[in-house]
Image (cartoon, rainbow, N blue to C red; front, top):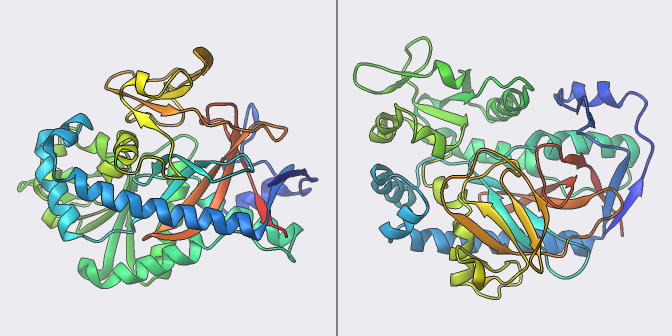
Length: 381
């Protein structure tokens, strides 16, 4: 694992905008950072692939155990009225892309270690699947890249096609000012279209309920299947949450409600309890003293690095603010991150239906927040 400086393309802003990445910069500088790149050996890439698929199997076993324990679902903070629906979805396996991004720590030595799994509303997908590949082809066409996310997602949509009523899907998101959610959802919609599905767009605020409590769009059309870039933990706490859960058989939600199990950081302690000492896991517990005096404290449902505290030998090294103060806190063993010259890289390793599908790298301080930079990579050696 090496980090190299490289001259950005003269027209890099226009180049990434042409691929859809319009949030490439803000007042503080670039988010997409092609002034550097990471180079990995093929052996390292194979290690990341193996880790992704191995940890995915651990999540399957953990999910199977969790659905059998109401007390664990309660500890996860999942409302009681969702428990039956989660168990049913886990058993019946409704249509699902079953995709996600494992965030791994890796300092160039040993095995990558799981920080968390972003699998309900994962972002940085366009950057990983398309933008960094276009960069590689422009600068290093002779080299390879760990990247099959685009093709695997199209393949997964194609596999779901016959399981979706009318072979059509609605796509929804928040109308965010930076347009990241908008473009990410539009990219996913394009993938579904390439797989032969009829697609429709609807902003989350324009979704409503008909007289029977079924989900309809802004034109009062019954939504038979919907891809959402909006987390389940928010949906179930909306006023219409109980109606959505009650009418799940009428609408296929992608991703399904059982993703609430995997996207919750509470699962980290379940994994460690079930597979203590696994080479790709870090010790985790809701009891701080079980971890020792070097740990990362994170709320069960925090996002974008909010409300995180990094402690080493009892000393607070970094702390972030945010809106996720309520609920329980997870304590995870501190991993020895390595600064390669411009911050600490976190490997976002993608899986699609259990198969390793590529990687995107974000750099930041000890806490990876929404100001992290995305840095491309190549395989060399």
